[in-house]
Image 1 (cartoon, rainbow, N blue to C red):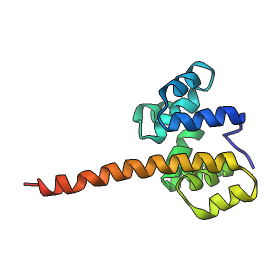
Image 2 (image 1 turned 45 degrees about the vertical axis):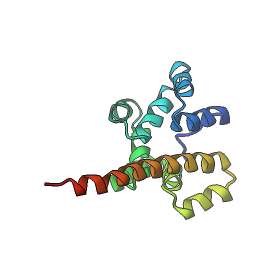
Image 3 (image 1 turned 180 degrees about the vertical axis):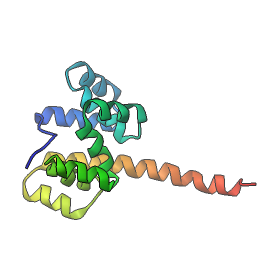
Image 4 (image 1 turned 90 degrees about the horizontal axis):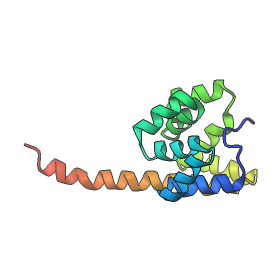
Length: 141
């Protein structure tokens, strides 16, 4: 199964810390040949500039970012480019139990760890967004 995330475990761990918002780790990724992972960590947090950079330079990571949100076109693109692992990983990041189980069965614990980090980031952003909705709805004119 083809995998866009074929990096040493230390790099994957650094990627996870960058997703958590650790700027010094993200800067290290940018400065040490892993700019694409730094940009992906930003795109996962809804940074449009980072996403646009990925589209130009690393479309597989742009598609992965969209696949996390269950974008059908992104998943088709990944499938057509034989990046089926990326689809499984994206589904795990979205919290899909079958994808997490597949990663566990194949002893890919680092990807389960990363998926939990991404899922936490998504959930926190959604919680912040939903906490503002009552305020805006109450102040409609």
